[in-house]
Figure (cartoon, rainbow, N blue to C red):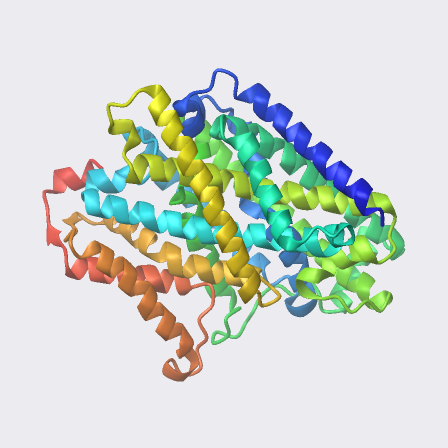
Length: 488
């Protein structure tokens, strides 16, 4: 493998991103950064969000799970699709009606400042952990399989990648990443299809015979039927549905792009189209995982889990163009999630925590503050990436879902309580409740089989967490004027 040439290709790819960033960020301002001047095309956002919603985690970890659990993950994806419809027809109308820049301002209007700040802080925590977990995985793969030969270590790789992300997002924000995400999603999908085509040819299979072979090797099993097991189909579907509601509908990064679309109808089109596109793409990734497992078995390769795809693409003697496709696909999967997260976290902190839009500052001072926050979050990303390196357990897709379950639960409870009840929270209790419910869930999950007669908690952790927080919010709340609640 020619590592130097690969590095040159990666740098050329970044140069292309920087060119797009320069072009799209001309005449940009704070509104361009935060919501893209509300002028994004829905079909561009829908296509680009495939890359954002999937990330390098999907590119690496999803194919790696097939050898162990088959198409088990697709149960969660079915839930995702249902969840997208709920986001499109319940949450998006709310956001457009209130004309929000940050979706957490809904909590301020519905409850008050404490709920608003608490919701925003939980988003910041959730998205920081989720984005850096995804970022860590890709940096690990690049360092281990591509840059080690050039004696470029993990720390240097992480710093360089974050600097490059800063360079093409610091000016344009959402206005830029809507277009860079579209480019990167295209590269990711092309790389995916090229790799599938080549592996099929190496195994001397077409799609019909490949599916039969995968089935014969028990790689296409999809639905879990044991109600006590974590992969029971109903748990997975319901868990996936609420994960989408929380990680998309209540996530400033994902909604920031949606509310940058000109009108509600087009934004809903974006969400519905995205739901089906994501389902198709994940199914293709699972198919790739099954083919890679067959290839590894046929060639007696020991790689499994997160190492499966990179080992075959880079170290198994495949042609160099497959290695190039893999690396470009990998970094194309990485950056739509990392750049969008960095932009959304900057937006949320500036708007929700600092209240930058309500301050009587000049445009220049607001821009300077935004850039400081942007750089600060890049540094926090770096610290988190180093932390995840120390606690890596070898397969990170399930870790990501568990992190989401703990951190998005209180956020889901706050929005659900606001939309479906006519009560007002006890603002002093809200932060305590939002901290307490994940702690209760942690101890419940640690002892689930013992306390629940053999029942193992899976992706429904998010639902349990939100339910506990909802009950506590209800018990500490009071009734309010019906008209006030329903108008929000």
